Amino acid sequence: MFEAVPAFIPVLGRLLLGGAFVFAGLRNLGSMPFLTDALRARGVPLASLVLMTGIAIQCVAGLLLILGLYSAFAALALIAFLIVATLIFHNFWDYQGEERVAHLNGVITNTALAGSFLLALAIG
Image (cartoon, rainbow, N blue to C red; front, side, top):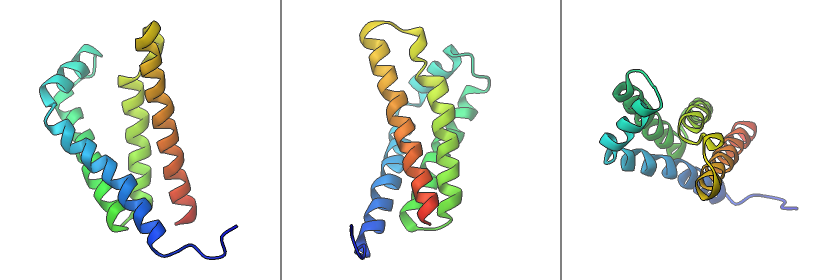
C-alpha cells in the first residue's frame, strides 16, 4: 500500500510504545506501597524486590525502545514483563461482573501490546 514509510514513523512508534512504559514505570514508583501490598496479597515472595525489578524493566526497556538501542532485547524484556504482570494483576477468572470485565480488558490490552512488540521484533 505504501511505497515508502516516512522516516519519522518508526521513531514516533518507538516514542509512543516505549514512552508508555517509561510513564507507567514512573507512575508505579509513586504507587509502591499499594503495589507492594497487592503483590503480597497475591502471594508473590519478595514483593518489594519483584516490584522494583518490574519498574526497572518498564523504565529501562522503554527508554531503550525510545532511543532505538537494543530494541530486540527491550521488546523481549517487555513481553516477559507483560506476561508476568498480566498473570499477577489481571486474574479475571477470580472476579465477576464489572471487575471481571475490567481485568479481562487488561489481559486484552497487554496481549495487544505483546503483539506490537512482536511486530517491532519482526521489522527490526
